[in-house]
Image (cartoon, rainbow, N blue to C red; front, side, top):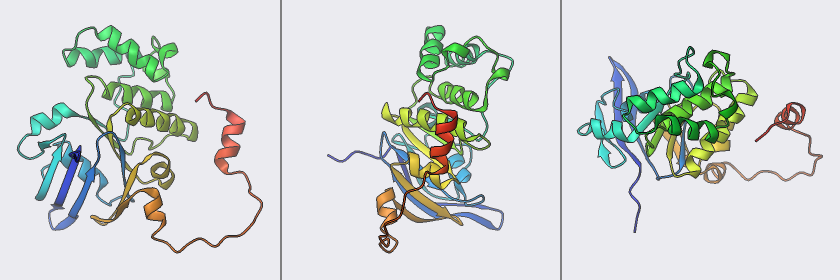
Length: 252
């Protein structure tokens, strides 16, 4: 039996005035996978996310999330998703635990304290639970933002350039958190302009350029689009990532 896609996009079009932004975008996302929408600034990535999350109306095309039509069932779509933007949407005056409890209460969930404690442990923030978020590092804030997005167990999460402005160590922390999301069955649509981010995280990658999907496939499938690499025997030098992690260490 075939599994219905968690996200379905077909013939998606959007223009701002006389300027076309999306020109027939099409892709499907398999449940429980990480799908990367890779493109430079202005390619249309955020517009796709805004349409799928019901924040913007498409000019043409068919879109569904978790089996619900985005245009005709927006309330059902919103119940199925969580959206994390380019900057962490956390309250700096509150502690990490208080931020999580606030969202749990707003969603009318039982035992907000237990929900907060479970998520703090899951995202390695227990030691910082009672500290004000204003004291958190960039990576800690983003991990807290991701934890907040999981309250209510949404089956689909949109991450719109989640590592923008983060330092290398914070980016790696976020990568681990995103991989864990998919590992637990959450479907993740990730937009990014960083090639290494897509390479590290995504099960499938679609390259969006000037409002069109140029290619869509696994990393291996995309690599096969180029001529075979010439084999040469050279001494392998450490990468910058190897140097960075050796010097600063990592607890992941």
